Image (spheres, rainbow, N blue to C red):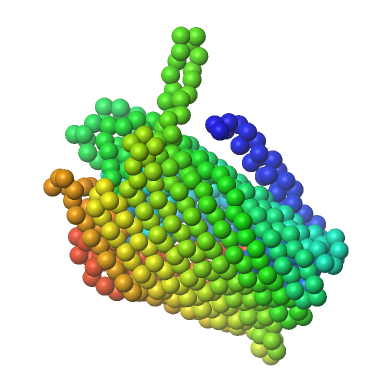
Length: 529
C-alpha cells in the first residue's frame, strides 16, 4: 500500500508513452486546415476527449501557446494568493492518422509565483473553489509566498478495427511541486495518473459505449522550520494548527511528514448519434473512493536503520454522480458547440483513531456552455459565447456546530469579431461580461462548550462565506492579431479582466478590505499548424 516507488514507476511509464504520442504532432500537422483553427474552445475540448469523432466528422487541429499572466485579488477567499504571476506552455491537437486510427494529446506546463497566501500549508487553493477538498490539513495564520510548478500530459488513441466497433484508450499524468519560502516551510509533491478506456458498438448513426477509468492520487507534504523556536503558542502567526472538518482544529500534533492517498475506479456509459452535420452524445459516470490522510513517523532502530511508520489518521469518502451531454452542429454556415454538465457530490470524513465523523459537504452544479461561430462574406469570423451555471454547496460540521449553505447562479456572455487587414492578416476584438448572483444563503455558527474564539471560523469560514454570498460582476476585453503564413497561423493575444463586488456583505465581514477590484492581465503567443 505504501510502495511509492511502484506508483511513481507506473506514472513515469504513462508519461513516456504520452510524450511519444504527442511528439507525433509534428508528423501529422501538415494536413491541418486553417479553417479548423477557428473552432470554439467547447468543440476543442469535446474533440480532445473523444478523438473517435474524427471517424464521423474529420477535423484535425494542433496548437502551441506560451502565456504570461498576472492576477491581483482585491477581494478573495482567504486561502488564496493576494497576487500571482505565472508562465504557461501548452501544446494540444487532434489527428486522424488513417480511416481506422485517430489520436488526441495535450502537454501543459505551468510555473507560478504566489504572493501572500495565508492559513494553508498544502498546495491547494480556494481561488476557484469554495473549499479545500480534503478537510484534514495543517495551517498557520501567517501569509507567505509560494513557488509552484505543475506538469500535465494527456493522450487518447481511438481505433475502429471494423465499422461496428469503436475503442478508445487514454492515459493522463499530472505532477505538482510546491514550496513556501517562510516559516513554516512545507514542500509538497503531488502525483496523479489516470488510465481510461471506452468501447462501443456502432449501428448506422448510433453508438453505445461502456466506459471505465482507474485513477491513483498520491501527495506527500513535509513541513520544516528554519527557526524551530518559533513553533510555540506565543508565536501565534507561525504556530501550526491541524484542521479536521470545517473548523475542528487541534494544536500540538505531529506535523513534519504527512501523506494523502486514494485510488479507485469511475464507471459509466454513453450514447452517441452522428450524421453528416450533427454530433450528439450523452453519458453518465459514477465515482466512489476514500482519500486517506497519514501521519508519518521516522525513527532509527537498534540496527541503526531508519524506519517509517504510517499512522492512518483520517479519511474522506467521496460519492459522485455525473451526467453530461455534448452537441456539435453545422447549419447553413453556422457552427454550434454546446456542452451540458451536471454533477452531484457528497463528501464526509471519518477519524480512524478517535472513531467519529463530524464533517459533511454536499455540492451539486449544473452547467451549460455554448458557442456559435460563422464567417461573413469577407471571410471574417464572428463568435457568440454564453455560459450558464447554477450550483449549491452545503457544509456542516457538528463538532463546531456550523452550517453553511449557498445557492448561486452565474453567467458569462461574450462576442468576438475579426477585421481583415489584408489577405493574410486579421485583427480580432472581443468582449465578455460576467455576473454572479447568490440565490439563497445561510450561515449558522454556535460555539460548542467554549466561548473562546475559533480562529478557523472567524478568519476563514466567515470571510469565505461573505465572499460567496456577495454579488459580483466582471468585464473582459481581448485583442488578437492573426497572421496566416501558408499552413501556419501565428497569433498574439492580450486579455484584460476586471471583477467588482456589487454588495456590501464582504466589506462588512472583512474590515481591512480597501474596495479594490480584482484584475487579471495576460499576454499569449500562439502557433496553429
